[in-house]
Image (cartoon, rainbow, N blue to C red):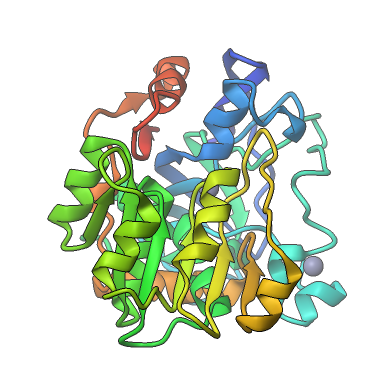
Length: 349
Ligand SMILES: [Zn+2]
Ligand SMILES: [Zn+2]
């Protein structure tokens, strides 16, 4: 292995970034060396930078929406070749009880939020030029997809997990509250599953984008979102609501958007400060309602997400900001991503 070091962007504290170097881990027989091309900035990354999600800890070598090209592989790596474009999965040990029951997203041995690397960092080192990872942590993505789009593997996997949990069926009508990156990604995935989607949003650029992608939209500056949903469903309400923003108002609207019985609510997003959900248990009872939580993703969801990206069933081109940043401008990239109303911002590596 000729390349010995990785250069990566990290957070020392709220609002304080640094570009550092460290030795690349030794390559094992089952590892690949990846030349990373891009890593997109997740809400968790800029949320910590701006001080809203500091519970994740410091020093944070964040970033997990990365993609790149395999430039070297271990002797026992099968199914991947040098030159393949790959995107990253969560790490999972494959040995613990969670992994054995298909809940790799809950792997007891790889909980990145609780662990420090040997040299004292939290995080996945996503904003790094090179990376050594076990081949269980990658999925192949078509080379004709831009790297920044391949970086949607992880967020899309979390969406796929939620769409499965909410049991979305073809021809159902589903409301998605919030047309930001994750709201729109939910909408695109639901559409790929055959559902009709209504999005509610306040930012004009997001409303325009959602409309251009063929969705019914409700501009909540002009119309009450619950009334809007009722208008678009002839007073029936929707089969399910995906709450893709983390706030109390959205939670409470979702209940009123549902059809008379057997409606489902998917709580997709966390919110900081912590939101409330005010609901009477009688209402859940009489309306035979389901309230479903989702967080993270398992390996089967990553595989399904790779298929959705590779087949073109979910196209994420419109979920990326056209302005991109070099690693040396890591701080500017995080500042730009923190501006309300932005889609995913890409760091080129
Ligand atoms: Zn993410
Ligand atoms: Zn495990």
